[in-house]
Length: 381
Image (cartoon, rainbow, N blue to C red; front, side, top):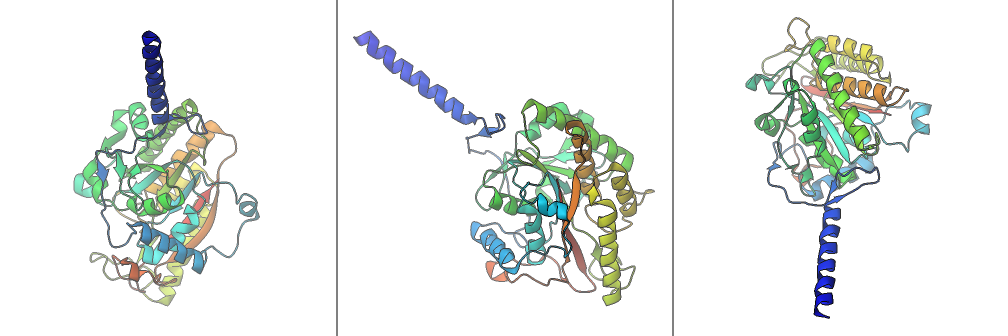
């Protein structure tokens, strides 16, 4: 009898251990083993911007309520195809990263239908010059990033990608990732709409089109392998966001530079906005194509010196890199190309300030006809 009791308790103990182990790597609906239950993080990336972005639950919930109450900044003409597919989550998108006071409604327009568990964010490396970073994409080594509902886990995708990518293709640089704000700004919205979201921050510094095309296709090949190995579904399990603010315009407070080729008045404002819309409609909407992205890149970046702007979009590397990677990936997975839809366009001047300063959210720069920024939300499915 004693032996039977011992065997019984041993059996129960082993079963409990097996059950706990199964929980720690529970499979999600796609069959992936990337739904870890362990919520202990040794290294959490903190906040770089405590002024322009929500960093508490109360703040982000109030911001989203305000966005919903004021309505979308959606463009007037909506494509019939987009209406028909409105229940399908975005596979990829372009989202701003400026202060919520100015741009929150544009964030919301792309984030509402970004539902994937794993999101790769292609960010801007604003201060890459300070660290002599170029020609390689930039990862971090953190376990999680701080979010308004608690830490946002870094997806296992990151380490899987680095294991398969050539070492010459990337660098791990925590200092650059720590001071860069272009990924951080997206996290509160991502976590609001999906509490279980996991991210990979991929900063894209200076590089030529040839290098950008090569690296983005290498990354696409690696992602294709990982997606197939783990039965991931585009849009549902994995999605891609390009962080970008459109034209930075004006002749004041741009570090002594004049970014107002059309003049810093109402007429100049209208011309600059129209140029933004032309760039978007000609290169970033309808069928996603490498040729269109290359032309977009050459419109924005000085081909003699890629560190110099031709048109001051800060996402001049993150957008073509991220979208070219997605285009190449789609070509390996499905026949039909992704199609881009302009969901909204706004500027820091046109909509004015969102009335959320009572939430201790502020602005990191002024906004007027002599200093303003454009924003777009574009979805791809």
